[in-house]
Every structure is written in C-alpha cells, then in structure tokens.
Length: 260
Image (cartoon, rainbow, N blue to C red):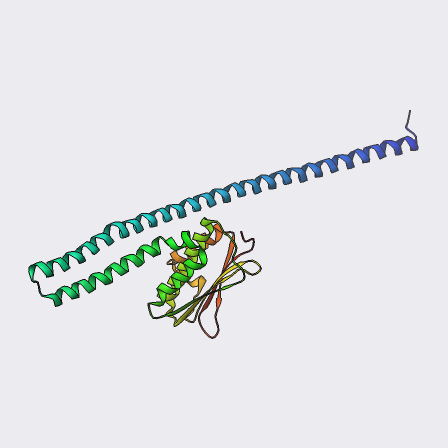
C-alpha cells in the first residue's frame, strides 16, 4: 500500500526534525567540547603563571636573603675589623712614637673605607624600611645618593597607606634600581623621586639625563636591571612604564592599581 501525501509529509517532517535535532546536538557538542578545551587551557595557563610567580618569588627571596647575609658580613666582620685597625693605629702612635702624619693619612683612608662599607651595608639591608616605613627609607636613599653631587629630591603626594613588608621592600628595590641606573647610565644633574598615594599608588622617578631606550636595552642582552625591575613589578601586580622627560631625560613610573 502506497503512503498518502499527508503521511509522506509527516514522515518527511519527522525526518527533517530529526536531522535538525541531530545537527543541533552536534553543534552543541562541538561548542561544549571547545568550551571545555578552552577552560582546560586557561586552567593550565593559570597553573603555569602561578608556578612562574612562585619561582620568581623564591628567586627574589633568595636574592634578599643573600643581601642580608652580605650586609651582616660587611657590618659585623669587615666593618669591625676596619674599626679595630683604626684604633690600633692610634695606640701605635702613642706607644711607639710612630710619626703622626702618615698614620693620620691612613686613618683618613680607613674612615672613608668604613663609611663606604656602612653605606653598602645600608643599601643591601635597608633597616630604615623595617623600622620607619617606605617613605622614610626612600627619603634616606635620596639623601645618601645626594652626597655624590647629583641633586636627588624626594616628595610625597596624598596620605600614606599601610603596605605589607614584602611589597614595601619590592617597591624600595624598584626605586633603588631606577635611581642607581639613572646615576650610572644617564648622567643626570637632578633626579626626583615621588610617592603618589592619590587615587592608586604610583612611584615616579624622573631624571634630566641622556634618556633611556627600553627596547634597545632589551635587544642588547645587557638589561639585567630592567629584567629585575619588570619581575618585581609583575609580583606587585603593577604596571612599569618609561617615557621621555621634557626637555630631556626619562620618566619611570610604577603603578599599582589595587593598592594594598
């Protein structure tokens, strides 16, 4: 018995509907599979980023521990030995009748060396940071470097907010690296260090030196300082940028959007 036209229409409609449902099921399956693959990829990338962050954190902590060890050695061993030698020279002059003028010259050299050792020790382990906070530590840093003959000014905008010790240390190291780099490579006559607590948090280091080309430093393969700066910025969840200063020099800015 041949199916009627109405029956054929019903069968065709059911078949078409089945094909549409099957096609939709295939599309949904593909989309679901792609979504799962994307989620898995994002999860894997997140794990890799977290691993890199932990490795980076561990490397910087190791670096800070080594700085502490060196600072302790400089202060407790070398510094004490130099001071003892200086005292011994004074005793030698009094007891043995050694000519005073050459000894005074040696004592002056020792005084300069002791001062240098103490400065290195402070740079390696900024005790002011732990005792009095970031602002005072940066003020001290600028004051110490001003002795080099370059005008280095520190200023602050807004009301300071509490930051954990780890973040303060990383921000201090960024400022220290930026100031040292400017003094060493840009040959400026003045440097300004600003902590801006308004809105977000910004550390701004401005100099009037010869300028700084970020890409050129990266391509030269000698940008270890820049590499360290960018790593610290990454751990702070901060943006680090460099722009030209007018009429000459560089503006370096570290911005933390969600200040803590």
